[in-house]
Length: 280
Ligand SMILES: Nc1ncnc2c1ncn2[C@@H]1O[C@H](COP(=O)(O)OP(=O)(O)OP(=O)(O)O)[C@@H](O)[C@H]1O
Ligand SMILES: [Mg+2]
Image (tube, rainbow, N blue to C red; front, side, top):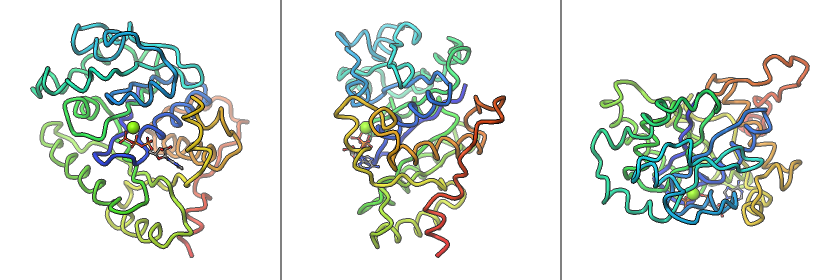
C-alpha cells in the first residue's frame, strides 16, 4: 500500500482537484484506490456525491468513536472508494489535541486494519491548515504531493510546506519523500515562467516533470460530480493527470498494475509540453 498525502497550507492550489483526478487515474489503471477526505470542508465528499447523514459515518467516527476505517469506506464509482468527511471534523484540534498518539492515529489505523490487502494506493485530501488532521495525513504517508498553483505568492505556500516537512523529519527520523506539482499552469503567462524557474531552483528533483495545465474541463467537472476522465477524457486536463500517474509509477511511488500487460503503451511524460517548453 502506498499512501499519498495531497497537502499545502495555502488554500485553493488544487489539492482536491489533484486528489480527485489522481484517484480517477489510478482507478483507470486497474487499481482500487482509497480516497480519504480529511478536510472539514468536505469538498471531495460533495464532488463524489456521497451522502453523509451524520458525522459518525465520516472519518470523524474513526477519531471520535474508534470506528474501524474499513466500516467507513463507501463506493465512489469511478474514483474507487472514499472515506467521507464531515463539517464536525473542524473540531478535531480542540477535541483531540496534538499528542504523538493522536497525530499518528491514521497511520496506525491504516496499518492495523491491513487495508493494504485491498487498496494499493490511498490518496488523502487535506485542508489548507496544518492542524491535527493534516499532521495525521503527513505521518501516514509515503509521499507528500504538494500542488502549487502558478499564481501570485505560489512559492510562499510551497516553501512553508518545505519548512513543515523539515520540522517533521526530527520526529519521523527520515526525510519524507515529496513531489511539488505545478497546477493551473499556463505557459503563455510570464508569471508562470517565473514561478517555474523559481520552483526548479528551489525544489530540484522534488519538482514533478508533469505540470497540470489551466484547463476549463478540470474546473467544470466537480460541479457535475465527475472526475476529469468521466467528464472530458480527451481534454488536456485528463492527459496531464494521466502523465502525473505515469510519473509517480516511474518514480516507484505507485505500483504498476499493468506491468504484466506489456502490450499496453505507456505515455512518455518526458515529452510533456513543459519540458519542450523549458528547453527553449
Ligand atoms: N488545472 C486546473 N484548471 C482550471 N481550474 C482548476 C485547475 N485546478 C484547480 N482548479 C480550480 O481551482 C479552484 C481550487 O481548486 P481546489 O479546490 O482543488 O483547491 P484546494 O487546494 O483543494 O482548495 P482548498 O484549500 O480550499 O481545499 C477550484 O475552483 C478548481 O476547480
Ligand atoms: Mg480542497
